Image (cartoon, rainbow, N blue to C red):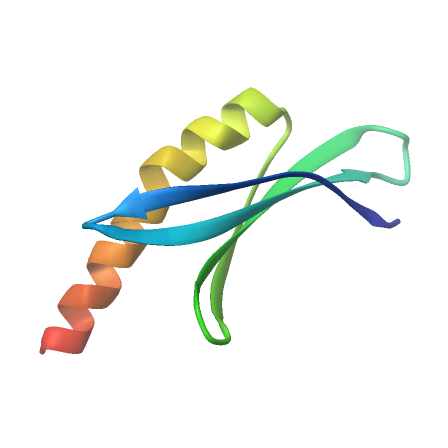
Length: 77
């Protein structure tokens, strides 16, 4: 099972841009799964996955900013 890079993009959160890499993977049963690697900086990244690309893009739009803000809050304490 290999990951195939299908799209790159970026998202802006609080004035800072974060790189996004979207991948497609075939499961053992032949189904497609999609994942997005959100590069937050250095070796800090999160992976979000879903069954469809539109659903994944929607999740990334909601979860990436929430993750960035939560990390900002934890760094401030």
